[in-house]
Amino acid sequence: MRDHVVAVDIGTGSARAGVFTANGSLLGKSEFPILMNRPRENHAEHDSEDIWAAVCAAVRSAVKVSGVDASAIGAIGFDATCSLVVRDRQGRQLTVSTGGEARFDTLVWLDHRALAEADYCTATRHEVLDYSGEFMSPEMEMPKLMWLKENLPESWVQAGYFFDLADFMTWKATGSPARSRCTLVAKWNYLAHRQPGWQADFLNVIGLGDLRERGGLPEESVPVGKSMGTLTAEAAEALGLDRACHVGAGMIDAYAGALGALSGHAGDPGTLERQLALIAGTSSCIVSLARERKRSTGMWGPYYEAVFPGMWLAEAGQSATGALLDHIVSMHAAGGQPTAALHDRIVKRIAELRLAEGESLGGRIHVLPDFHGNRSPLADPHAMGVISGMTLDASFDGLCRLYWRTSIGIALGIRHILDRMRDYGYVHDTLHVAGGHVKNSVLMELYSDVTGCRVVVPKMNEAVLLGTAIAASVSCGLHESLAVAGAAMYPGGYERLPDTGKKALYDREYRRFLAMYRHRAELDAME
Image (tube, rainbow, N blue to C red; front, side):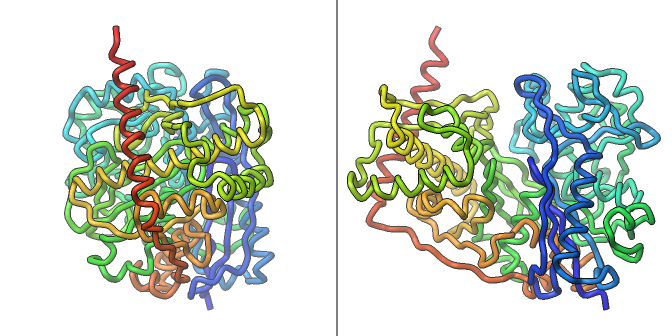
C-alpha cells in the first residue's frame, strides 16, 4: 500500500529530503550541500545538475534511514527557493554567469544583479503590480529575465526553458513542462484569477514579449496538491524510487512552510485568517491568508491560490535575518566563522549579561536591519542597514551586546510589518514560527515580546518539509484535500505568550526604531 510520501526542500545551501507517513510522522531525513558561485557583488549562481544530484542523494539516504520500501511511496513533492533555471531547447544547461561557465545555469533567489530592471518594472505602474505590492523586487523572475536578455543575449537566443527551481525539479522528475500555480503567481506576475493568466501587454512593456516562447511557459498552471505525473524511468532510478510514484506540483519553500505551520487550521478559513506563518532562517517570510483580496503595498501579493484553493496569500519579509546575525558575528573582531556552536555561545553569554545588566544591556546601540534592502514594508531594495552607538569595544561581550541589539532590530522589523498589515485590514493574533530561528532562544523571546503576539512553535520543527509532504499526499490521493491532509498530519505546537510587563520597554524601542528610519531618510535626502 502506498501510504508514505517523500518531501524535498531545496534551500540556499542544501537539499533536504524526508519520508513521511500518512499521519505526518517523519521516519527519516537526510541533507546534502549544494554549490553556490558568487563571482561578484550581488551575483549568486547555482548549478542545477549539482542540485539534482544533491536531491537524489538526499532522497536515497532518507528512504534508507526510514526503512520504507519504494513500493510504499505514493508521491514525491518538491519545494525550493525562487531561483531561476535556464535551459536550451534540448534541455541542456545555459549559462547565467558573466564568467561564462555553462554549469552555472541558475540565478539564486538572493541574487540582486537586476536592481535596475526591477526599478524599471516598478516605474511602469502596470496593473500586474497591484498583485505584487505595487513594486517589483529584484528577487522576482521578470527583472532577472530582463537582465539575462540584455546582458547574455546568446543564452537568451538559445533558451528553450525558463523554470522556477521547484518547476525545474518536477520537469526533471517527470519530463512534464507544466508549471505550478504557486510559483507562477508568486514570482512570474501570472494572474491566476484572470483568463488569460499571462498579461501580454506587461511582457511587451518590459521587453519580454517573446518570454513564453523562449521559456516554454504554458498558459495554464497546476494547483498545489495536484499531480504533475509520475516519475520517468531515469528519474526513478536516480532517486531510488519506482515509476508509479506521483510527483506533486512544486512549491515556493516559504509557502510550503506556511502550509506546514498553518495546516492545523486549514479546514477553517475564518480561523486561518487570524494566523500568520513566520518562516525564519537565512531570511524571514511572513505569510498571511485571506478569503478576500486586501491591499498589500510593500508586500508580495496578494496571490490567488498560491497555496489554498479560493484564498489570497500575501507575503512580507526581511531579506536578511539569520544572514544578518551571521554577518555581525563574522565582521566583529571577537567573532569568526558563524557556526552553530558560536551562535549558541553568544546566546548563552547574552543570558548571563542580561542577568547582570538587566534591560540596559547594549541600550544605546540601535540597529536598522536593512543590510540587504528592505523587502517589507518599505519595499526598498536599495535600503541599507544602520548601526548607531558603536564604541572601540572589540571584546566578546561587545559582540554579544551588538548581537542582542541586532536581534531586537530584527524583531522590531517584524513588528513594523505587522503594523502595516493591520492598517490594510489583515486580522491576526498568532505567529506560527518555523525554521532555523526556532533554535535561537533570543529571537524566539523577542518575536513574542516585541510584537505582542502569541507565538506557536510546531512540535516537529520541519514545517517546510511537512508542508511539501502534505501537498504530495494529496497529489497521489492519500488524502482527499489540503484541509483533510492538514488535519491528519499537523503535529500540534507549543505556545509562548508575550510578557506584558515588557510592553512599555519595547514600545519605546519601536519609537526609536521608527525615528531611525526618519533620520536615514533625512540623510539620504540631503544635498
